[in-house]
Image (tube, rainbow, N blue to C red; front, side, top):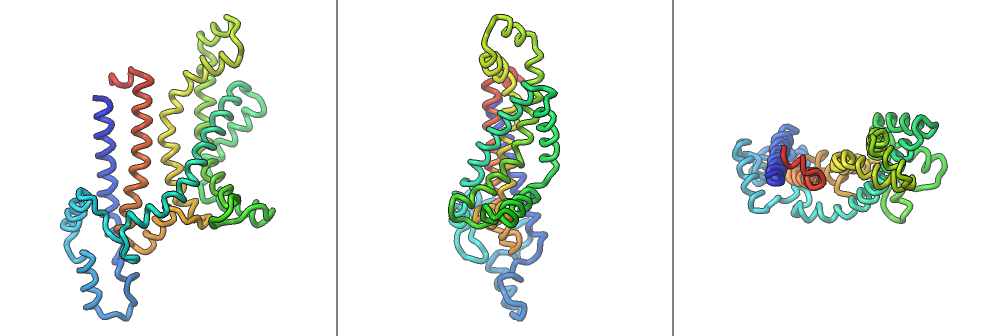
Length: 303
């Protein structure tokens, strides 16, 4: 029942998000203003709205949208006249090229930094890391991106400021995404490890003459890692959301930038599908974390 309830909750959450997005996009205005020049006759504008299905009342549009989703029909872009699935899937690999390395880098930095800070409690490194995590959690993604461009592109001229081409174009956006999420991981790992290191079983493990590496990694980190797993889904969600902004800052031709373009042009079908994919990715990541946590800790399944 635990896994079924989590799956049903995820499905309901996704449908609620789609519903909110559907009605919110209709409040942004008439997309025909972007599709037709201002001097076009009103009759042609009305004809175009009818062709796009925008003349019907909002309830009818919503029901038609739900039926289309159940059929697997996600619609066509108002502007390119191509299926939105095709447009989006062309950009997804570019987004994964940023988010996957950024996620790995973020977890690696967070785990290593938090673990070392806990082992060197109250040291200069510990105090510096604590300050850095607080600062990084307070700085928006786009500010970090702009700062890296100013330093490494405009001032030092070491790396390109945007676009996609050589391996150098990956460095700044990946670092920007990783820095935005590794602070949370480092802070939580440090906190959990400090709590574990103070437990009686850790002192008992040391008294048995086990090596420090075995004590820390086998007895300490294994118990401290469970709470960290709960935020991994949120971390991935933060990366996905951050990719939307980061791709715009670095002019990276990914799915996030495509969603921003859809917002600016009021391309309803493309925007709705983009948010569907991003939301599904975040929800699925959190579902996997819930399942993993339930498997690792049977007490969770009994709640």
